[in-house]
Image (tube, rainbow, N blue to C red; front, side, top):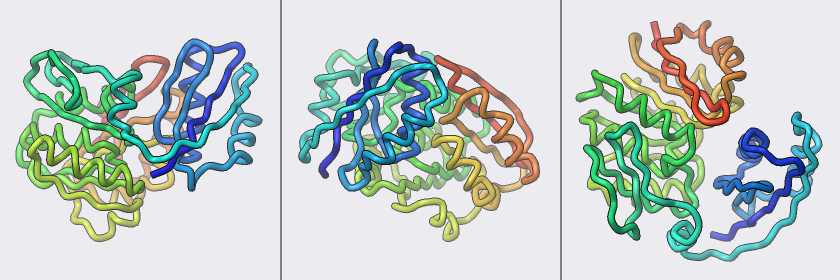
Length: 281
């Protein structure tokens, strides 16, 4: 699969700026991000790349900074090798879960050992949104035998952890074909039986309601699709959300409360990245 590697230079630059820029770019279809001291490098499938859309996002950017960008076409390659070269290192989350890849040596020991070869799919545990979702899953005391739907499963990391914790049927839905294939591969690497579907929220129509529903996506997608989520969660079930900022919570709750959801827990990590644990009445 061919990609564009797009370099964004920000002046001035801060973690808040690159985090918000990544959120804007995710809405355009960008899949992976490498922030640094002067800007951000982002990757998008060649078929999804639009210079016009990027320029419009920069023009609408709400923080005080000057952003320039350049792009480079990248032919299909060994993405595991690229991740190994650059920034994917083993990570231990909450002292209980270690996430690493097949090329790592001297991996720390933890109760839950998740093997992820990410390619271009999002979700290695390094981003605050993924690590917050992992912590929520680790904190669930009633996951044994429960059914789970993981919307926007990415690498499959959250679905895999749910199975490791004893969940019953786990279904992952992923809109990107490359990420879908990667999730299937990662489930096999971890010897976990997970049902994966390639599609968007319309794929929920064919599923039975679940006890636990996960969505680590972004605010706009969540608010657009949350009514569909609600239809696929049992009364008394749990909805775990991340992929947005603390300032987005009122907007999300405005959409969630009429559907019967109430807040059980909120968390914030890194540069105001937030997560929500909601309960459906």
